[in-house]
Length: 69
Image 1 (cartoon, rainbow, N blue to C red):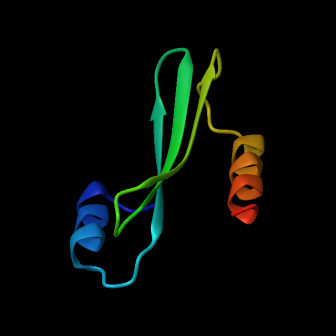
Image 2: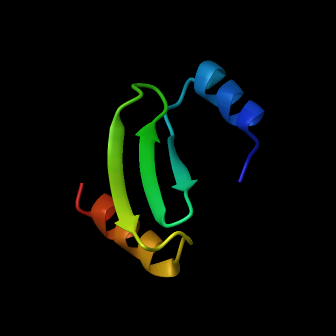
Image 3: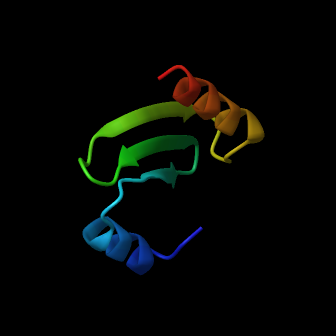
């Protein structure tokens, strides 16, 4: 994990593209999204209602989706 300031710096200054995960948690929901740093494209997103903690299976789903691309 890195700070918002470091992420912003990497997005602006990095010459090599990388992917970063954004996790948003509300009182009853969670949103997980992955973006390409160079293009800003959303490459993966998922929403889960009535579950707000990030779990191992969430990362497993992400891994599976990435390996298919």
